[in-house]
Image 1: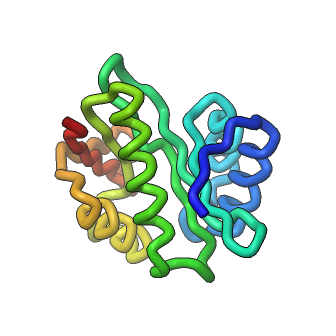
Image 2: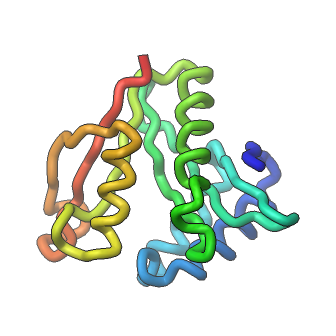
Length: 152
């Protein structure tokens, strides 16, 4: 069941549990801790199955009319079950309801890591379009692919 969480402690506990379980994507402790810390002030949407949270995403305002899908994770046992898509659809609905006109997301460029290629294909399937690749964000070894989507 998809729900929006507002309680800060629940946001942090959920983000920690899921991101720590997804070490292949969130292996850098410093970055993972930053996502967990920042999520308390963001729109937080989660999926609960059998009484436990198994996936979440956060939306962060990056401009007056733009929101970023800042972080997203679904426990591996629940991959390819439609939860990521349901989380994204709810995030898109909430972002539109909040008056945002654009959504962006950043990930590692396609072709660098197999795990991130899966992530790239997911964002493309959701309707995101390639904007640009910037090496200065995470370095040459992890080129940052930015995707965008119109919400209007």
